[in-house]
Length: 454
Image 1 (cartoon, rainbow, N blue to C red):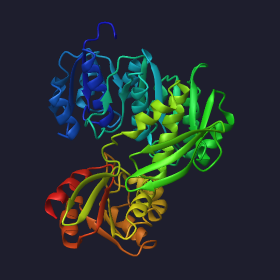
Image 2: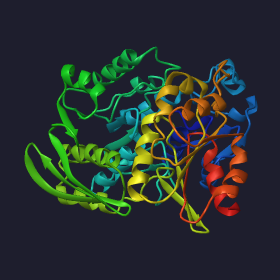
Image 3: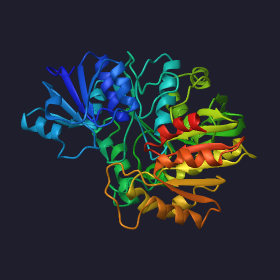
Image 4: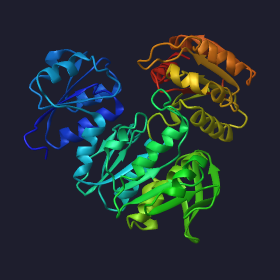
């Protein structure tokens, strides 16, 4: 595989997508090294797997690498990337390396604005239960193993396909799952039409013998459904579809629902996950499993004990009668779905949502949608924006967002630096409270510290 390439260096190896690919390659026998500016949980995990990770970026880090892989988070002026190009070492984006891995397999790609990580993980669980032993690369860490990959021996490879910068167009999967399409990543795309166009191009990459699995509940998906010329399976919870979920019941932190396929009832499914959005994620995975010939009994088995994904409504602790959860949600739709799920579960509890906005561009484009997404929280604490490498936009800040939220919500408080949350929460939390930290930045570390400080 890869001919004479033996040594691979990753610039920005700590990224959740980068680290999964690095671990797969390491387990395939390649010599893998990497560099990152932060000693994140992913970096610590890589080091436990005996992968050399350098702190910071320096030209000498690339050593005698045969190829360099870089994340889209680094700029063209990165000193390691410049050094690789000066030495004529091939340097490729993460998505291209993922495409090379998929080229040797029957690729299954999961994409969409929301639900990619959970759906990819659910598909992996179903294929494993069905005896298909897949390789899986996800954009999160499974609760059961703490890892963001699974190395299988079969021909199947399941990956989370990143639409944020259209890099998923490097991939050539046989099966594509599309969860939903919304206005997002408007730092890269001009508008929703351009986003839909990118998804259509991705669908066009499916070979004649492959399939498209797509959510027919979502209105923006309908544009693809109406014009896609591929074999297609639609799934739905609220609308009509080839695969339909119904009779949804929540019990504590689990959900049961019935499933029909082409009008024939298949039976009931129980998942250890709450929320209708997770039912939709499961329907996508079930549809893919059926398409691959996995029996409904095996599908039920794969879903019954699904361990969940790190930072997806993850319970991180309980202190003095207050419950603490952490969630990756950073888009208005995700936040609204998460808080609705918590309100359904904790009807009489005070819900405190701690939100770290992610990227100035996202707040700029979606500020009005954010204002409406915290309806089910009793208290909203807003921190300053996590820039994720972006430069500030005049007139856009965490304080401005908090002021906009105040027009839609009775109790919004701006706390400034995310580190201030510890003190603020400590001073206000009471027994019975449910505290949820939300965001794609470094607020997750605060969630863990909160449990030790309250």
